[in-house]
Length: 326
Image (cartoon, rainbow, N blue to C red; front, side):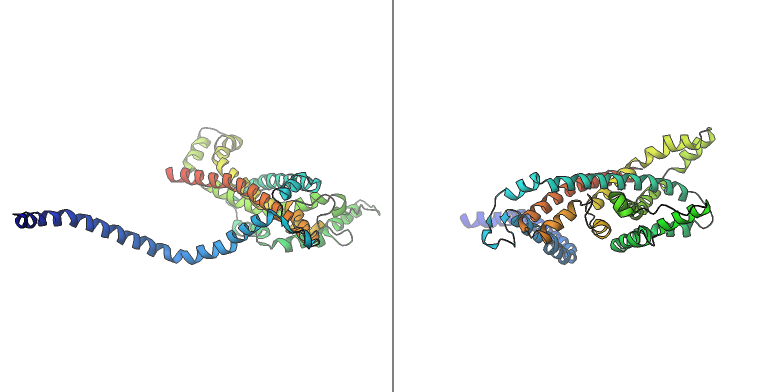
């Protein structure tokens, strides 16, 4: 009897276990396919971790260390002393204010100029492609080269283009003593801001131009047929449509301008109240040789940049969701 029971139930057990084995095999096959798709990305991911994440982890570790190359005997664990020194340092507070002023001015002026240029380029006229290419060119210039161009070709008090233009204008009125201001000394922060505005206006223009060209043409045409003026169309149709694009351009511009080092270092060398956060970190690391405090400053800047980048990513995702639902 026991033998008969076992043989009778064996087909039932096989029937029960076969679907389970098939499901397990299917899951293993799906996992293999998933890993096959991810495998080409693994070298890039490993490279990204080695290049970005490991140095940041090392920076965080060093930020809790008392490490000054000028005092090698006092090296050791510093707990939160470096962070307390950063928040109580007058130079650091001044650089924060300078960074905020520099970023807000550059982003806002670049947005306004970029919006105006985008509205002009949204119209059809002969040579629009050439004009668009010329307007994009400043954004393609290397930042250091752009800063050198403004420092020597425009701002120089002896042979700069700005003072040369003033001499020519004053000569038209018969004046022999034209003003020759030293732009980098009289208005150092404005000098840095102007070079950055020239460089970042094309970036804002491209984003806003993409937003303008995605407007629903039927709504614009219906508004014109109803007698709406150009200002009404801009106020009630264009601006609401561009809101997401304006937010995206402002947030992305803020992320990049906050980290700007080239213009400050090249034009003013951080003097006359133009030292921003990246330049202050540079001074702490390469001039004061305080690696622990410089690391703490870098960690704080990275955390603030991540905060701004989070808002930027949210704006991008919401913009993409709106485009998909249309």
